[in-house]
Length: 431
Image 1 (cartoon, one colour):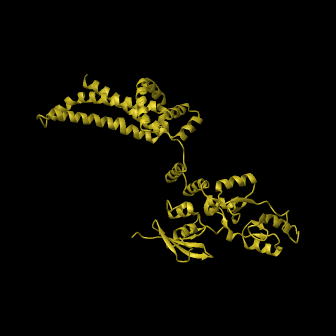
Image 2 (cartoon, rainbow, N blue to C red; image 1 turned 135 degrees about the vertical axis):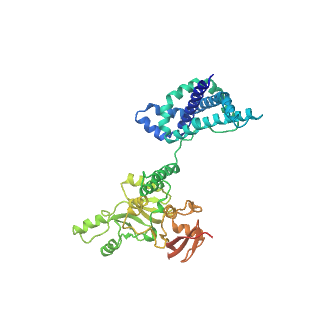
């Protein structure tokens, strides 16, 4: 063949190899979620792409047959076509015994670079830019090519499957989406400007409801304000005036004997109607939702939805009350400080010197996010900042006790009856 014919054939081979390379990356990188959306929008080609992804062995076998055949043929033709011309150019500077070998190497390198650039690198980079769009665009011709190579693909896959079985390799495609996958997508969206940082935190907090226990955001036992069944009206008025709560548990003598709860709106309605004296009775009591402390926040949301209640009392395995939780507490967990401006607990406050004041009841997830820490030691053993300190100190804490972890110093500032009220947290310079 003439040089022109060789060039035409070589260009055709380069384009064919480039098409197969683009197809291979596009079909492998196409995301199932986006393909489903395209299929729901009426693009049947997306269904064909998902079918190939589910049974990808035939496609990859056909692709490799095509790529290797084209590369070998291109190398043979290219070397034969360009070697004389490289030899002729080389004769201007060198005419020794190695001229033939050098021209062969130059021809080989030229053809190899041609295939690497136009048949491998560029097509694959293009496919990675929009894999779903390219995948649906090439699916019909690639299906024809797969049928064309089916006899060879069958033999290759038969041998490959035997080897995989021999070495006990599982070749099933894993399509499960985890929280880490969603978190990575959300983080990428925030970095790209599609999501605001606050929106990113909202989404991540919603998914944390599945893993966080109710005890991580409840009002703890020592902070619970309850009304005694026989409490006089004046005392009830004082409690409602002093504490910014809308619901109060009602107990018979002690906090562990909860018999219901009252809503301050009901009490206010009675007072406004001048029904005095006010007395706690069955008419003013609401049925309280009792939940175990092993419940997840997502499970509590389901119980709130089913019972039409927004207030629950949390008990431990000994049926002792350890706290109360409301729907507002869960909303604060999701929305941060926007959720309840009246709630001053569980706050993380940054000071002018770069240190932080952290409430002892702050959830571990909030603490890690504020400090930029990925993991704390043995997190399954505690749920709050106070629990972390007690776990690390291995004793009942006292003011000025401190621990250092991941370049951050945690110091106990205030203790109320063995309970850590507040921590001072600051970053320390590495040694």
